[in-house]
Image (cartoon, rainbow, N blue to C red; front, side, top):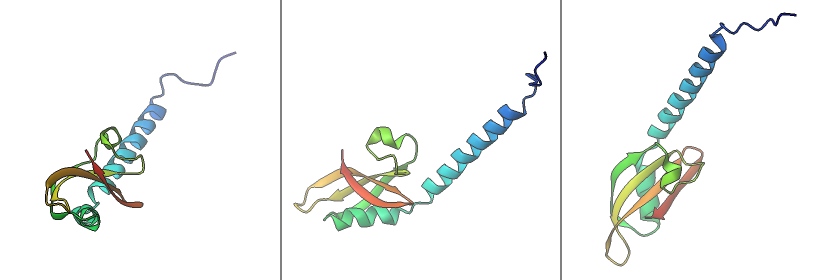
Length: 103
């Protein structure tokens, strides 16, 4: 017999697009609300001084060295304990601390 599924009904596709868009917006809002102070403190805790945030990234950060539980990557510049100026990254998220990583 005939199927009750209407192939012209676009509501499921539209609903899926709305849900995906909503999740992306919420994820970006959470990532952008992680304060720079958290990254600066993490760098200072491992011995860096004169720490400053160069940039903040929230897109494809797992491909740039962060973990899947991180939501933001900070590019940081600071002076290490031996007095050398270094550039490194700090990965952070709302549900975890911040991690200093060398590049």
